[in-house]
Image (cartoon, rainbow, N blue to C red; front, top):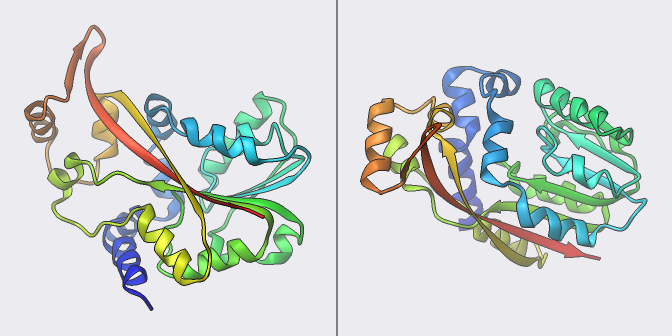
Length: 260
């Protein structure tokens, strides 16, 4: 086990949303149901942005895609307009329900869903011919080598991983205190130690979000709304608009990919 694996495991245990699941004794589905503004937040953030465009450029028509941790379909929905079959995996029934409702509105009939964590999915549930696989901000597994190996072994043509590239937002540190950190570099090093070389691309998103959505994102922190506002104000990140207060953010997404 390398220092990178140790760093990732510490990050997942103490920092990822799975830490909130353990502390609050919530299931995956309960967590996402409590975060009903998730799609609104994504819309304001511009995600998945340029990363989606780049991945789309690699995917050949009439192929199969496996989306691990598909959520409400940020990638699965647009990419299914290219593929002949998309398998969306997510442990939250609530998230998958929203994904399927979106697919129906867009007359997409080539998406199948599996309501499980990736580690619990059996190969026979997927089939042997997966052309492309994708994991975007969904690699929160302490056994990261097992997660990645399973993903790589089942894929024939191209593998895509999307994860954060910039440092932790100062609002996170203010809200939760110092915590373990991991980014795409950690994942790239783990893949390298496993004998896999992935290419890298970075994409930056600058955006603003209504303050009420920000409060929802930080609903499990110990700081009050007034304290969160104070921190954002001190950093010059608050915007007064006709429709209320908004906060400014910047996020950088890293795309790790390999095409066979």
